[in-house]
Length: 105
Image 1 (cartoon, rainbow, N blue to C red):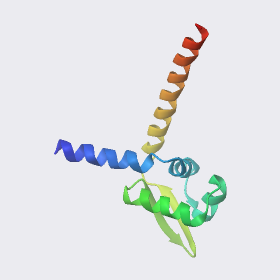
Image 2: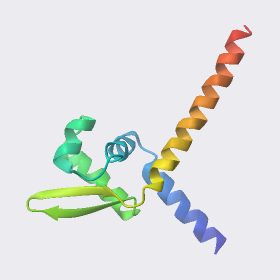
Image 3: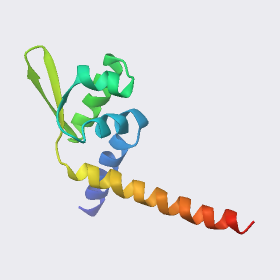
Image 4: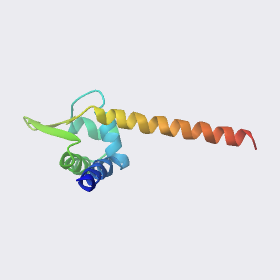
């Protein structure tokens, strides 16, 4: 059972661990957007963005729905942004530690 839980966690993290996917998630921080809105925000091509969204949808990070001809994308659970914020905090701490080391040189 524990092994399956670890595998599921790894799948979610793997689905997030790509720069384009992170850009897509960040673009959805303020709510649902059409793929046609996401593409210019992240400077991506629609086919590529759609492929990444499909992958994140399989990992249940995002949901999609049709609105006429538009495909609307939303983050399924806002706790995803807590993960992104925690990673940002870790990076800030690492940078502070490096700055301390550099100041000692």
